[in-house]
Length: 557
Picture 1 (spheres, rainbow, N blue to C red):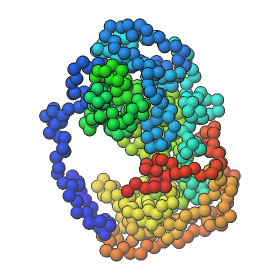
Picture 2: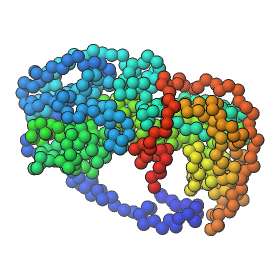
Picture 3: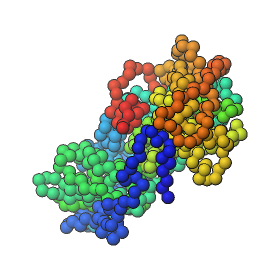
Picture 4: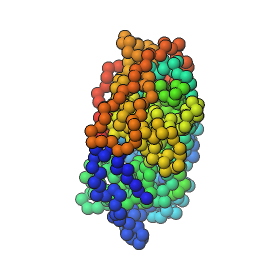
């Protein structure tokens, strides 16, 4: 039962909604329930060929020699495709928006960097004939040391996974090996906190497991064009990626998609389209390339593993005064979308809470695992889980109800976020109150009377002096300003939780608190530091990834 609480923030919008909350039949519903919906694999072509791929059995190995002569003579085989047949055999998905370096071959050249990496493709009259030919290909492997843990991968002497990024960390703006956030002085605040809680959180890779595995069918059309039926979730990304790898104008490729048999983020990487099109180009016939279930599990990209270290300083009355987060995203062997996930993570810290001192680092690390990709909120989901579990632990530490603890620390309108943007349209206080109400969870009257419109701004809207040097180290290069680290007092609750009048009441700023005492030398970091730190340099031009996150300085509205 959908319920609208329109009394909240009634003066910010009229909420006269035409669609939300109204019963509407999905456009594609009738086709789905009657079995008439056509997926990419429902398109029949005369003379259809089938493409299958030989994959690496090793997570890391040098390719000494590849012998395909027996496969080429195998019955039913029309073409064997090797790396040399790919016109531009290196790509990265986000290169289409000038974000990152090309680091992944369509077919392996000198090395394989994860178990399941494609090496050779066979195009044959039937799937059985293609599979039979794959068994006749001989590859001489020289196994190499592999690394599967993000913190092991950034230690000195670790195996180099991806030579495009020899330090095993993605480079942002061709300069920095991580994303970082600095706000206030966390070490100083930790020294003044009544309690410090430090925890480690680990998320494993997650397979999307779509009912329909990744696949596509490419067929020659007239005028030297090719039609491609695909289950991609990102039609124009797939079109651009295929055009780049095959070195053809995009107007020669006619992509048809829109019907996806389960994706959840796992069908944005163009895993099959470039090879199916190349097969059609080389044979002059339609080519179908569909992943089997085992291939989907091994080669289809999962949500990547994540590791988060969170350290919080909290006062006895429940106010969080410092938060330090170090996050590692396991990209697997190639970048795909993990670099973007690390950006999203740093944009989300410290969560929806007003914390006056925040220090966060987010790393995209390469390992010899299957490359990771998007999955429902990737870059946010894992760190959000970690932050909220941490909130429960903090509430327990200070002896507070976890609902009340969140209400106390939640953003109010007018508060300054750690990313130096003022908070507006806040609603966490109200959401927690309604959740408690629905769950029959008792919270005290003073917390039921609080809201997001009052108690914010004022001293809480100040931007504290942030002591950093170019490498992001707290303490070095401390600014001369004597502005104290602000430690906000408990928000002043309004007299009631009734709907607000049309003119919002003036905000009451909590009184400022004296600066905490100077801190001793900073303690050792929670996690090992990567082996290569950012180097001082002149500011780089605005990066092409601005469309993705306000962290780069541009919001999408």
